[in-house]
Amino acid sequence: YLFYISISIYLFVHSLVRIKLKNLILQEKLMLKNLIKTGFIYLDTHEVFKIVGEIEKVKALLQGQVTSDISELSNNGSQISCLLDQKGFIQADFILLKQEDVIFVVIEKSLSENFIKQLEQFTQFYKVEIKLTNFLAKGFISKNKSYDGKFSSYYKHDDYSLFMEACSESN
Image (tube, rainbow, N blue to C red; front, side):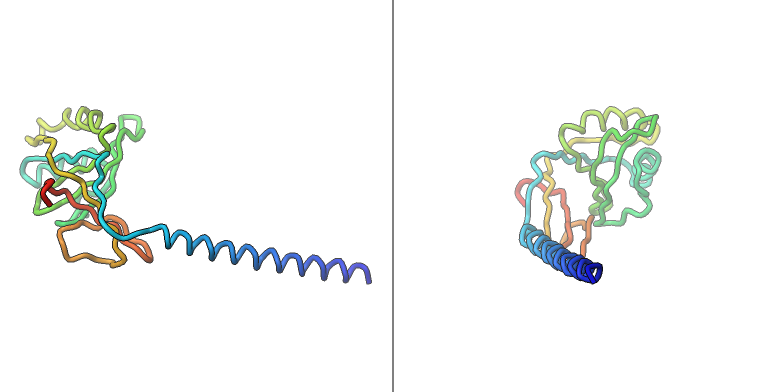
């Protein structure tokens, strides 16, 4: 008889714990949903580089040096990518944007010097140049899955999408 009482108590406590955990998870999801706000933000900690040259040569350079598949980078599209050293260690992470058949690199300022140093070893072979622009990286968070403007979507979630644009200061 005592055995049945102890099992009943265990099952009751277990049920209460499960209900409490389920409520905590729902509260956490609601809190995260309320933390995400839609709108624009300028990424002032990042720089925007333009890779100048024939688009096919720019693609060939990047295809051999970065971790993402450049052939999948569509016009007005973007990719998150990395630059690795000879041992396979990540040297820089960045976002590639393709706008109007021009490829831009949006990279954190602290990583840009090493990024340029690594890629400039190969630019002469492809007859391309990497130039710092005066563009700003502008991010946009939307509840829409797509955006008809000039923003490149680079992350989609169930509820939100992130878009990015390289733009002049006047935009």
